Image (cartoon, rainbow, N blue to C red):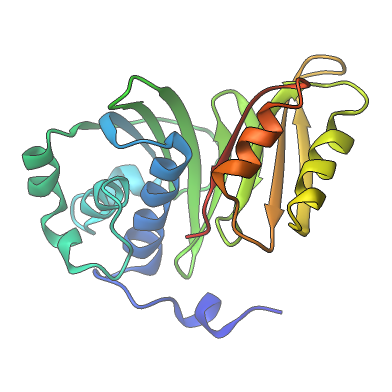
Length: 220
């Protein structure tokens, strides 16, 4: 069942739940996935985002999200200036993604510590979002739950090992999905949980010896 805020939209700065609130949440989620302050971001805009991003304030919302501002934060109005003051380099460019959702943005980011990642997602209405790509993985992530993201090789036993770590820390799994390039190749496991994910949990996941990397993304 859809909630009232899925229908009427959230409290926000700006004229449109899709073009401002959703855009801010997309930027916020992309920054959380990067896991460190953003130093440089190239933002590729598809569809209506590309056509109206200046007039609807989508540019300010996307950058505000990367700065860590929530959709209702009044600083979004000045996000472009604040980004320049903080040394965040950014650019916008159009991209044609075919039949992708018209409110799609792709963030090509570098963090202050040098981490690089590409995150793509869409503002799907009512301020709601869905992250659909992390680097070359096609995924589905809404940001409604704390999320554990595991990069690993597709092989038996990995899910069990990670599930055991979460059970040890009394973390309940709400949803789990595994996305793989092909059988036996690199995969990405996304686990949405009912509890917050601490650094101890992440380190225990990394210590299993069966994964390439693990990181947590808080709910937004």
